[in-house]
Length: 518
Image (cartoon, rainbow, N blue to C red):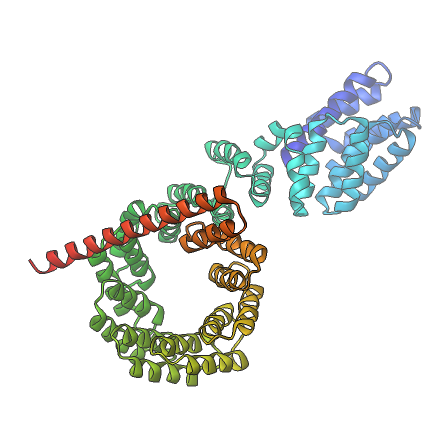
């Protein structure tokens, strides 16, 4: 903004020489003093010229510019206002008055003057640049970006305007328009590390992890000794599914900070995503040792062990976590899950009930206990637990979903439909609730309503093979054979893909077992 303002003042002084040299020696001398930076002498000459031309708006504007240079802003503004009254069609006083208002954060007044100036000259890039500055200050993103094309060169040359415009584009999800401006800014070193960080956050918020990673790389270049910048880069790379790039960054950080549990946990995640389960387990083990009171670290460690069917080891990890953490609620739920997988339903029920007693306001324990009862053939007990959850715990779409499943199993169709609808009301993206509701509606011959629910399930979960299969049956009953066949083929393809994926996972697990026991 200072650069823009300096250019305007220079142009005003130059115009004084061109327009008035033949009219007044005082004006010419005042302009010479102005260019030399001798503003007091310039003001005296302009005042003398004003005596000769008391109604000349251009002279009033020159006085205003000089008063501004001398820091006498209120006096300058009065001169600009007088000039506007004397000649409303003169652009300069509107512009200069707007600049003073803008500098004083008098945004409504500045916007009024800039818009009046635009009526006189819509192509003036400075007016659009000043408006962009104003809108950036007021967080008016749509209006900010509307100024860009008319003031592109000025905005690209001003670091603060460039950053503000880029941020506005990103908040409006117009990443494609922001990228070339970012490239230009980084080429000219226009952005600070903090600004790069804020841009990275905007990219990440929009799930554009590639854009975020590029910004974090810039920060690492600017601050090569900053471990936090490298950590942010690694997290962004993981979000981008670039775990192979994230691993060396995290390995370097782990060497620098071997007792940093967060770094070790991130490294474990990166290894796991890359399919290196043994190194992942080692990183998770080290993270637990570094911060033994953090139950989330035990949960990650135990989860991977469970995924590898190492239930006994997972149980030991969970037991250790329960012993070391002050509120092991989540670990107790994990312990019950392991007991269920081991077929010990009675122990799991006791564990889940204990967790519920610890925190009756949390729905997870009720959900886990109800699932355990269902798997143990105790649907009536599951129904009672879910009713208790609805009375004591906070509202949860999963509770209503499972309640609907239980009621459906017990032949309570109308109540089951109501439960699934309540689940959807709490979470419209609950694909399984849409699916189960669709099945019940189809059984009641409400085909159009069922069709809508299956289509909703597919829109949320595009690979929901069962929803496609149910849709094929609906279309067949509605007499649309072509669509019925299309849906059936899609269901078959998805089921085949699922079987292939399961076989690949089984082969990988067998290969790991052979490697572990040659």
